[in-house]
Length: 199
Image (cartoon, rainbow, N blue to C red):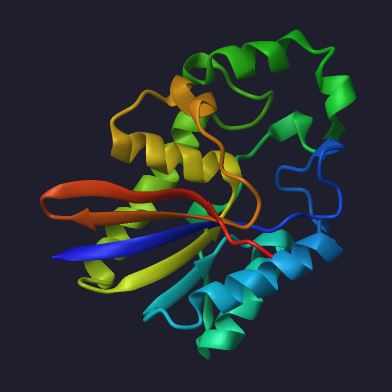
């Protein structure tokens, strides 16, 4: 009994590269992101997909909506695949974060660092891995799409690759990318990593 998971990072949002958005509201796809979301919808047009689940954050929902429309399927909101809770860092510019020694510590060792008043990457990993396990049972022998966020997708892939959380920087998960994972009673296998759909 297996289930195939297409782990989709949300498309590019309108504040990319300027602030750490985290879970702040009101972060929407920019024009580039909207075009990326349409390309994702086209990419999945001929796939047999049994369900589409998305993080509740606007940028993820706006990425999932064109896919759902193209496949004529409803969206399901899944809190367990939401972005990491960055606590007091949420909404802070990357320029300001660069001056914070706690930010440096976070990026050097995610295994034993926590954003102020936020959650650890290991806690985020437990969330998404738990969601994948539950959905594996629900979608036996079928394929589903999960629209989530870079570090959360990385956390899931690291778990299924048997790598420590501190290996998060060894691969990229780009905006609007697809990473494909098969989960079975026998274990799991990563089939595709960071597939970016060309324009």
